[in-house]
Image 1 (cartoon, rainbow, N blue to C red):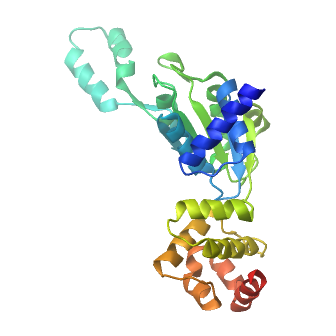
Image 2 (cartoon, one colour; image 1 turned 180 degrees about the vertical axis):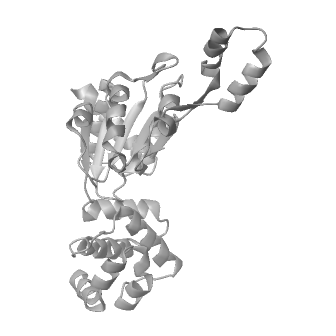
Image 3 (spheres, one colour; image 1 turned 60 degrees about the vertical axis):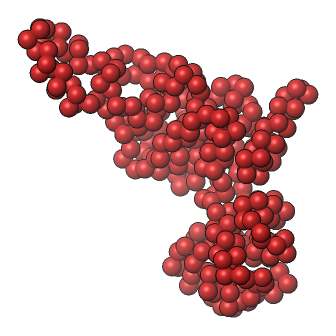
Length: 293
């Protein structure tokens, strides 16, 4: 147990050194995913640092980050492979006099004519990469079902070639904003981590690490305001990424204390929805400013 805890502490320190502020649950989940060679499903509100975590893990492990951005209509051709039809056609024209039609068919379906997309690329590396399947909740349920073989066996099936197994198993991290429910089959194949909005102390730590030169008092005011904003009736509450954007903007404007006028001038860095801007009226801003002192 002590050796495992030591490894988790080392991972926390490395993540912190890479600019990510982890906690014990995050480091433990990553350690288990690596030790057990299981995919890690990370859920949380938008902007809490799920994608950034995957990037920092790749930095810490000194390996490649291979990212598959999910969207509605994503299919195997976009995520797994495509055939390089132009090269296949050129090969046929070059060799059509040398081989029979059956031999030509076999020749064109060769790995050298494959265009690797993220999933196939991730299992073809000699060194284990980090495979980020980002915003899996944006993809269709059919794509989820297609992923199951990859998540459980670290292999994919290509009809013309057969089964391609991982050369070195990637560390698979899936993220979800919970815009829809994911299937039980996908969840069973993954370890699970929920990342919530950070508490005040952690968010201040994040902001001070990311925004150089920001005074601590100003960092506290910014994070207090953002924390109170998340308690408002907003469609899209500001995440940590918005906190960082706002802190950077305020630094650029040389602001050293929050007031209603400054918040109104820079509100577009933290509120990204027209209806939310309508809800976030002047009296709301003044009330939050007063509450944080």
